[in-house]
Image (cartoon, rainbow, N blue to C red; front, side, top):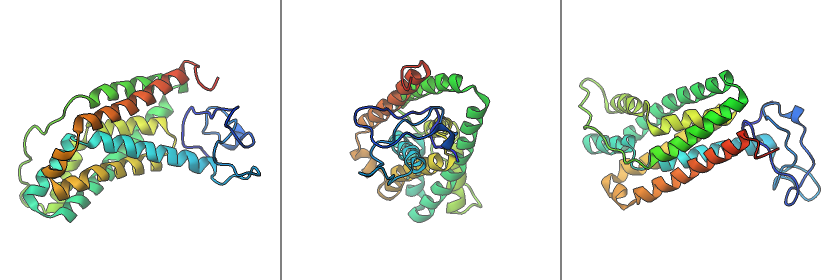
Length: 246
């Protein structure tokens, strides 16, 4: 049984409750968990298993950073253009969902492959720097270069799926999913979370269009996402340098 996060250790001491968790019980963790905070009951009984806690950590982090990063992104702008052109919001949202699942599943597999090929210490340095670069990239405004041309012979669902899948290739949120899949040892949690984040950002854009986008403080949202990525990068680099969990 493997944990859901690579190179992670919980702090011990003040505020930590519960008995130590053996490293052999969760070989996916780089260091043993010394305690499992907030998951243990008064008598030491675990209410939430470490595996589930780490799964939710990966899922929620992926959801949050991808949802924030998608606001104002070119793929969100594409979703609004498709909604204005076809006026079929349900089919467009379904196409976005299928395209995102396929795209981010590939991204997640690529991230896990990178994690397997690199030495754990080297991986941490690469991920830390990647998260910092992502933080800077999120502060650069995005735009849709040109409106997509109508795809004759294809229905609304197929056209949305193809256009959205291609637009997501090499996009911020796809690269973020690669990095998150390399950081966390749970493909399902990362892909599920990143897909949910994409839908949280794109479904309102499809249904409400420019009205929803105009009311969002895009620069502030991107700044928050950048801070989250910078925090992930800083913590990962500190861990790689031996500053955490030593």
